[in-house]
Length: 398
Image 1 (cartoon, rainbow, N blue to C red):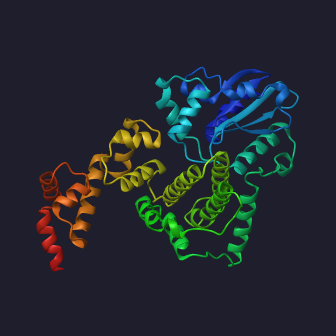
Image 2: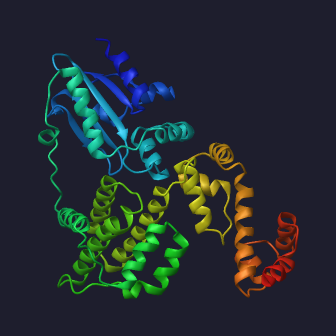
Image 3: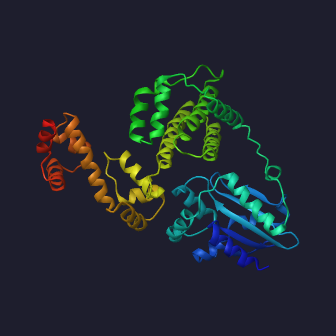
């Protein structure tokens, strides 16, 4: 069999990166071929012939980057799948990949485009890719549960047990929440509105608490964090459209991070960051038809930073893309430029404030980040044909 042609066809069909090794020597890499780079990826060193203890095998090279490998039995060839991601690719993931593969930053845009094109793949789905390749190349029918036993780590055992219990209770209609403020928090997170979450947390965080969960104050905070991240996943993430696999994975990553912390202040900071992360992901899971995840993330960022200056470079950095790529994609999907969209959104909020609040023009102008009140008045009249005061008077007559 021509294994290089096999790998090229597999990549063309799935868009999952694939590499071929002959013993310890890299023979083909879809990543290197697509980017025209001589990439010595870490898996080429990791999967040496004597290190593949099961066939196929799987490795999480970092918390976000995963690979799989299988030996083509009766030959010297090894096929490696990856990297794949079960969470959206971020700027941090791109930078990690560049560093691990010793790729110069001059190639960052090309690498970013390539990584963003890889389909999001849950861990279980990735396992099944490996099993299918193994069955196709080696003709062996195997039980993937035997090859990849699901053994929760010590840090995540309680969370996984609680997740399963809560999923069961939810199916049976027995899942309840103790506090009105806690129920409201889950509704806010499900909405994906980061501004609303900030407002809620500033006013209600003190009302969301549990009894004593451990004798040590730090252990109590960590146990509270474990309960909170688990409930947020089940009661906000899944109902908002996040996949169960994604919730499990994100819960595990946050608990692992929590267990590393050495102070109550660090745990509480992570608690706020976790809630905002789930809120953002819930918003992305409610993706409108015809809008990519990247553009929708930009829309959510604009909404949550509407009182601050937002530049194209800010948005590009936030989603891990180049400014030129984002400018082109946003215009294609939204029909207007980024700057025009931001201005329209600010003016729409201004209309709401003029209609439903008694804020002065100076206050509204300052709140929405306009350089001056006169500039605000000019762009408002240009957009709607009336001055802000005329609009306020007309809206009050209705």
